[in-house]
Length: 269
Image 1 (cartoon, rainbow, N blue to C red):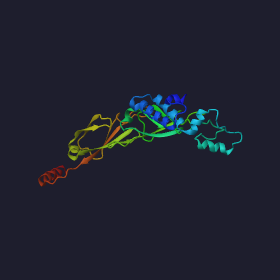
Image 2: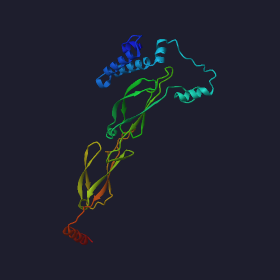
Image 3: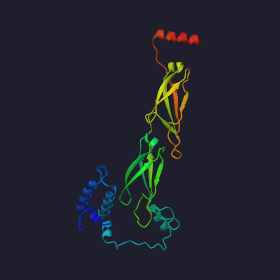
Image 4: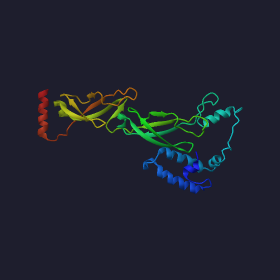
């Protein structure tokens, strides 16, 4: 790959000329402007090499390479492995580049359907990577989705590391999640609890469900609605909704109304 041709500059181009060419091309080919992500990745790769004097020198003179004598590295070999993210002892395990860990936040409603996203991130090698991924339905806050081969590529002679995408999901203001079930509270007038009523429950996805409250329902009673919770990330089976009833007790100051309530209480007793 000819990095100079990619940026459209000559081999004797100055650092300022390289930077100017890069900025123009990066803006032109950025995905937000309808550009090609693969083209932009090549542009970033070229600029990452040519902007660094040592990398540029090594690129211009490929015969100049560093070599390590590994015949008697001893403990240094393991220390080298740890420093550069290789997994364990280099002599006993396959070496690979470092993993890249990033965090991505989705909305609470995305948990029910999953979501396709485009992620752009920087590699330790200085390159920028782009990947289109699918966040599965049912994912939980703090879950890590692993994408092999999308990590660091600093050392070309060994496999790339992995991308580890940690998912963050903000709390819903009304619903609390436990496994695949969702729980909320619903405030109902004490008189409606005595007489019975129907109330509407809005799910996190915007669906409206009718919930019948039988007469003489006690505060603290919990009702369940099956099939409207979170889909399980492995089985896709949907959890339940749990609605805990709280009583609204009106603040009555009218003496006549209070006397009527007292008469009703005495009649019931």
